[in-house]
Image (cartoon, rainbow, N blue to C red; front, side):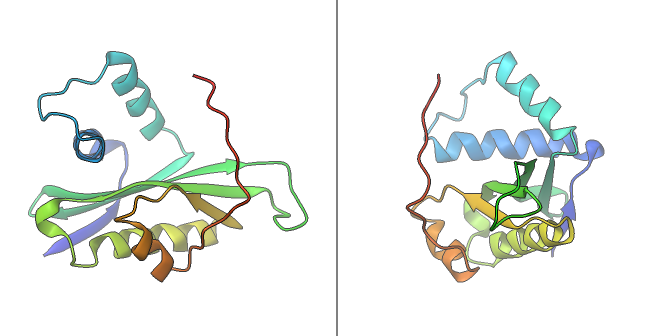
Amino acid sequence: MIEYNFADKNDMAFLMQTRLTMLKEVNSLPADYIFSDEFTENTRLFFETDNQSTVLATDDNKAVGCATICYTELLPTFSHQSGKRAYLMNVWTDFSYRHRNIAKTMVNMLIEQAKQKGVTEISLDATEMGRPLYEKLGFTASDECMTINLN
């Protein structure tokens, strides 16, 4: 039976394992790929902050899914007067557990938490595979966003 929990610092091993596994899969990296020390340390430090929440889906103590929401505050606007926004990312389900509504359950948990925190907008970058899920949950595509990569 799948269990869903908001992760805390005691789940750090699960958090790190799940995120790195997800990143390898999404980016088509080899299973033996080694992330830099800087990347893994900054990831660990971020998971320790209150600026994010992560839901872990587990089956018999095996991490089978994760979803993270990052919270931020911006200067209030007319349409977002609290300035509280969020970014949904790293929604992933282990291949052998897909099509069981695991991702939907995790994202819904994060949406409800965001509402409780007064967030007025959640944004995300969707893969083609994830787009139908997000559309079912009420997310819509936007032509408003432009970005610049400063790397």
